[in-house]
Image (cartoon, rainbow over all chains, first blue to last red; front, side):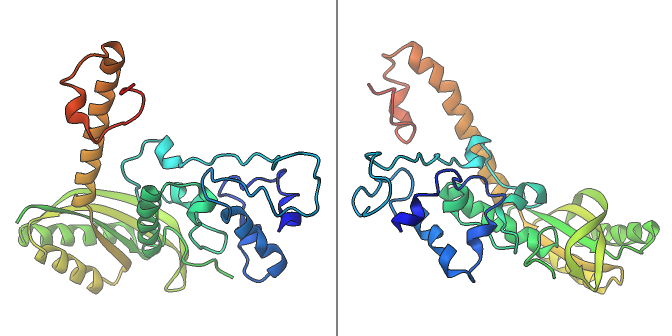
Amino acid sequence: MAEENAPRPPAPPAAPSAPSGPSGHSGPPSGGGYQGRSGPGGPGGPRPQGGRPGGPAKRGKRSFIRKKKVCRFCVDKSDFIDYKKAEILAPFLQERGKILPRRMTGTCARHQRWLTVAIKRAQNIALLPFAAEL
Amino acid sequence: MEERQYDLIFICRPDTPEPDVDKVIATLEHAATEKGGKIEKTEKWGRKRMAYRVQRLREGFYVYMVVRSTHGEVVKELERRLKVADAVMKYLTVRVDEELKRQDKLKKHRERRAARRPRKTAVPAAPSAPVPASGGEPAAATS
């Protein structure tokens, strides 16, 4: 895991737009990224300081800065999420049509709850896909 | 029973001529008023690409309505009509009044907080204001 964490800093888990890489279940070697990101204490949790056998030991603590993700709906101060606006909801879907988890998008719990409902409604009226088409 | 509000969206086949779509809308309006509800708003979104194929078609003519009624019969009747109508491929009814209510509540709450905040910073000793706040922001103001 230490080796996997090391090369990550240049590519932080940024926007929900292009996370298709770690999304695939098929690739076990790349799948570790998921857990590595979420495992050590979610939002602003303490970084694991031990357990780094190899790697660049010069930089004392974990040197990469995890950019704090903020809930987009909290920033917009939205009091509800409209299922009719597919273009707002679309970034929260993976390419294959899965709903992105909170740990990827940084959405707060309350808004994620509303978001899932909105996405599911939009799917039912064909504004959003259930799954990507062939 | 209190009045309920619903969103009703249906998708017509893309090859339906617009008069036929209007006909569907008219029958729905008629049915709603007959059952004691009313259609508050009708929006024709027009031909839109659907996210997946429905009846092997990629496009559909979307129509959006806002329905108000005090009992579920109205929705039942509207859905029955939509099911029967040949032009309609897909429909969705969503009850929205509770969400709108929640939205209003949150909005009011936010406005009240926003109105209170500047006063607090200006006059630190205002015992009457922070007491009912209780649930509000715990930080900053107390110190």
